[in-house]
Length: 260
Image (cartoon, rainbow, N blue to C red; front, side):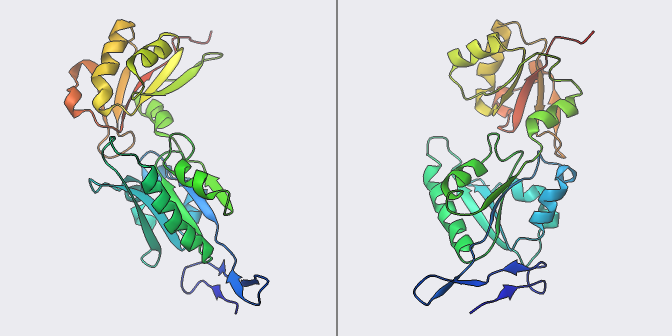
C-alpha cells in the first residue's frame, strides 16, 4: 500500500510511500529529523529556513520543564498550526536528577513518529549545537534517521547586540563558559580570557561575581537576562540580588583591544 499525506491535511506534501522489507510486507519511508534553532526569544529573529520547516512538518517536539515553562514553543507559538502534532519533552527542573532518562524517553517517542514516516522538528532555544537541548536527541537518533540541523541565533551573540558592545577584535579569543563550572576552574579560565561570556548564571551568580571582583573584571562585566525577550533586563551587577538572578542570564566581558 502506498500513500501521501498531501496539502489538504498537513499543508505540504510529505512522502509516506511504502517500501518492501523483503518479506512481502511494506513500511513507509522514514521521516526526517530536524533540529530547529528558534533563536534567543524574539520571534522575528527566527531564520527563514527554520520558519519554512516549522510551518511544514507534521510533528513538532519541544522541551518542557516541571515548572510548566515551555520557552522554545512560546517563541514560535504564533507559527504553529492546530493540525500539527505536538510532542512535549518533559525535563527535570532539579539539577539533582539526571536528564538523560528523560531524553531517552523523548527520543523513542520521536523515533516512533519518524519510523511511521512523519518528519519531526525539534525546537531548541538559541542554536541547537551550542549548549542546546537538541544535542541529546541528535546523539540518540542521528545514526538511525536522516537528520538536518538548522542553526539559530544564540543568546550569547544576541546579548552583545542588545548591550551594544563588540565582543572581540582582531586576534582576541572569545571564551564561552557555564557558571556551573567549579570555582577554581572558572577562575583559571577567566584569568586568561581576552573576552568571555558566562552563561547559566542562576544560583551561581554570587560565585561568579566574587571571582570577577578578585580578578579585577567587574568594571568590564555587563549583565543581561532574557535577551531579546519582552522581559529583557540589563542591570548593573552591583544592583543585583543573587537570589533573583535567573538561569536565562549571562555576563559578558568584552575584549579590551580596539582596532587602530
